[in-house]
Image 1 (cartoon, helix red, strand yellow):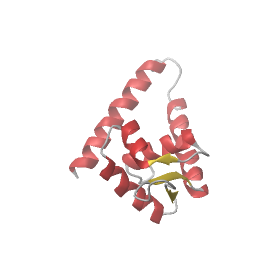
Image 2 (cartoon, helix red, strand yellow; image 1 turned 30 degrees about the horizontal axis):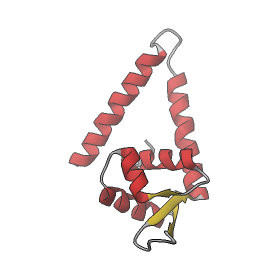
Image 3 (cartoon, helix red, strand yellow; image 1 turned 45 degrees about the vertical axis):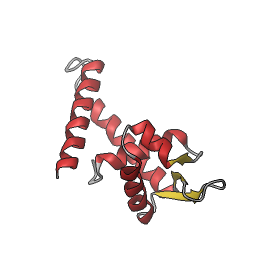
Length: 118
């Protein structure tokens, strides 16, 4: 999707749902059911791209909190809009809404798996 790894899109989605609040990296990992180190790597790269802003935890300097930057929020909105346009592109009656959701989930899982392999 727009040349963005699916793993980043999922992180953007979680952060967009929490916006404007910050989310801890360990909380992101728990919500996405992936290990914290993988999330940390993605967040570092996303921070370099100015998609997220990080702040240290005031009680534990080893931990960081993350929230979407203005650029990250704009990107997520573009991705979200593209997703809705894709769903609307099906002619009425082609597929039921639950069939579209199932297909989208299968495609997401396949894409995520391929990203891990390559």
